[in-house]
Image (tube, rainbow, N blue to C red; front, side):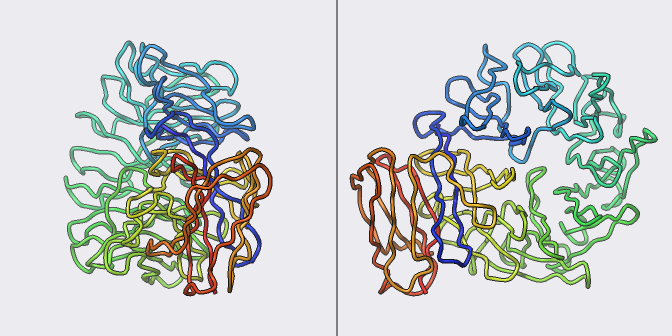
Length: 498
């Protein structure tokens, strides 16, 4: 599996050169996937789970020395950590908390100080059984998580980082497991979804001050479930999706007192929003509007916006004008939205929207019609990390930097500058290498049609110049890519022809 970190340069509407994506390290040689997950910031370190093909899914860290295996928590078995998407770790004090399995205690809550071996923080289900800790969040010196003690089923728990003790907080379904998920801090309470054999799966809150649990609302009245998902806190409100028989799955908000349905794009019982895996990030804010992945009654997963000022919902853009856009994640940073979407040609790839211009695909990470499916976004300082798939490296770790976040190369043994960009004529690509390399250059339009290709060429140490003939190319956006002999993506970015 290849662990690749790709720094994708974006067009900022200026003619300056771009910092380019680069492979940082091949963690697992070959085409298998390291499938990085649980991305989390620990100071200036990026901590995550990954598989190097030898040790299974274990604790990894990326810092100034590169990406390296931090600890093999379960050396006697395949893996200590999972590959579940849309999960993170929780930082409190000098420790970071996460679920792991050491091969003896099952999957339980662990903590790590960034230097010494990770320690078992709490064994909820004693012995070799797993308590199944999955979601972990930090709030006021405590770690909230879901776990099963073997007696009460899966419930909400808390770990006190001062006393180093774990306590079960809820028993929502006293007849069995409550299946707690989507644990989120809003205002001063802990919100989550849970199952009760009277009201089904609905939204609950836990008050740490009064040690009390409350049903927020039985949105789908009776035993049927509304199954709230995608909980996201924006501008003093809790936004989420939920299902009712009458309206399907729609966008809702909660202001601490009242739950309100906000959308019904497809009027009636058909859903305006598809259900997703637990915790998927498909709701985000940009400016004064709330953006989400919605359905138009025929096709799924287009970019929609809800305006809290007037209550209106509007279609922003169909990345695929004749089919499903299938937006699978939306991530807001500064004044932009990044999201994975399809256009009917390139598969599910990384797109960007700044709130005014037409959304555009940043790069075709998995060349052709197959999908890179970017997800698990995390911003650290001036870098956005995420996981995605390409043909040569499998599912790996990528990074993104554009001029609004600061341009910076990470670990590519050289630099690539593309100029002028935008251009009215030909384009220069300067490839400056620290060591000789065999590379190929390709430029394709947004439909995937190749307009220029320079097959494998030997480039010497130092500056190499490639002239890309664009004078007769139609105006529009193009994707350029630089690959090595094995077909691994070294650089990709956008080129604009005026």
